Image (cartoon, rainbow, N blue to C red; front, side):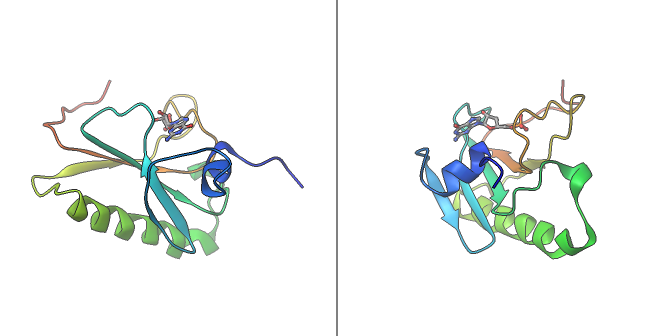
Length: 114
Ligand code: 5GP
């Protein structure tokens, strides 16, 4: 069996985290290095390395991540808006090779990103 990803270890409780939500398809926990007052990672239990590795059968799962993001944003009181981001690959500055949706909010964000 291949080695667990960092986020699988968090899902399994091998690494502690500040979990805010979980279900049979995904987990959501606070980023260890938050870029805003609210910075939560929404991660599918399925260890898809990056957006480049998505397959047809992942469509519903990816939609589920966005629905969870919207619900968590509401629970976190982000009524003025927020940002959702998937970093992908080297230019996208993805550092953990397990697909994850960043939910960032709680302050005025800028555009374009760096
Ligand atoms: P990426 O750069 O791949 O898009 O995002 C990875 C995110 O995971 C980063 O924002 C980083 O701070 C976060 N991260 C890395 N290691 C840990 C960890 O052990 N626990 C938590 N909660 N977040 C982590």
